[in-house]
Amino acid sequence: MAQATRRRPVKPEISRYHPRKKAEQVRITVFQYNEKDYCEKTAARVEDCFACTFDPAVTWINVDGVHQPEIIETLAGHYDLHPLLQESIRQTTQRPKLEDYGEYVYIALKMFYLDEKKRRIITEHVSFVLGAGYVISFQEMEGDVFGCIRDKIRQGHTRLRKQGADYLAYSLLDSIVDNYFVILEKLGERIENLDVELVTDPSPETLHAIHGFKREMIYLRKSVWPLREVVSGLERGDSRLFHRATRVYLRDVYERTIQVIDTVETYRDLFSGMLDIYLSSVSNRMNEIMKVLTIIATIFIPLTFITGIYGMNFNIPELKWAWGYPMVLVLMAVTTAAMVAYFRRRKWL
Image (tube, rainbow, N blue to C red):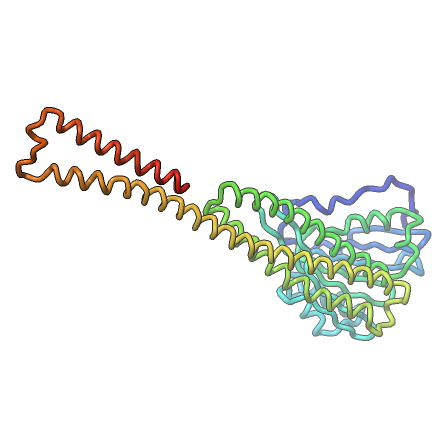
C-alpha cells in the first residue's frame, strides 16, 4: 500500500496527439483509493486485480486491449457480468449506448484523437462497467485522455478521492466529453484556414479537403448524437448506483454534450456553404476566362472580315495606290481601338 503524498498538480495534455496503435499485449492497470489512501499497480495477471489493499475503497480497473476474450471472461466471472455484456465489450463497432443490468451499468461510447500529421480524426471505442464500488474500463489502444483523473487520484484532498465509484464513472465520461471540445476547437482552426484558402485561391485540393471534413463531421454526428441519450439515461434513470449528488454533475455533462452536437451541426452547415462557395468560385473563374476569350474573338471578327476581303483574288482599287496597304493597317488598328474603348466604357474590360 502506498500512502498518499503531496505532489505538484500536473496539467493533463489531452489536446496533444501521440502516435497510437492497437494494443498488442493487454495491459491492465488498477487504482484503489479512498479519502486517506490510494495504491496504483500494473497487474501481470487478471487475478491480481481482485486483491483489495484496504477497505472501504473504490477500485478502477483499466484494460488496454480487448482482443483476448479470456481476460474479459475472467473479469466477468469475478463480477458476475452477463454474457451479452461480454460480447458487447468485444464489439468495437457498435454505437454509443447504455444498458442497466440492475447490479451494474454498462456504458459504451467513442473517444476521439486528432492526428496532426495525417490531418484526420482517430476513433477508439471505450466501454465502462460501473458496479458497487468499482469501475472497469476497456479500451482498444494504449493511451487515453484520463491523465487528469489519475493525477487527482494520486493527489490527496480532492473531491474524487472523497466520492464513490459513481463519481469516478462521471469523471471518466466528463474527460471524454471535454476532449470533444478540444477536437472541435482544432477543427475550427482548420476551418478558418480553409475558408481563407477558399476565398483567395481555391484548388482541387481545397475541394478534397472540404469533402474530407464533411465525412468527419458525419461520423462525429453519428457518435455524439447517441451519447446524448446515454447521458440523459444516466441522469434521469432509476439506477441506485448513481447518487443524487452525482446526477447534478451528469446534468452538466448532458448540457455540454448538447453544445458539442450544436457545434458539429454548425460545422456541417459551414462545410455545405463552403462547397457552394467553391463551386461558385470555380464558375466565376470560368466565366471570367470565357469573357476574355469572347472579347478577343469579338475584336478579331472585323479584322478577319477586312483581311478576308483584301485577300480575295481580284482587282481592288487600293492595290494601285501606294498608301493602300498602310491605310488598311491603320483601319484595322482604329477598329480595334474603337472596340476596346467601347468595351471599357461598358466595363467589360
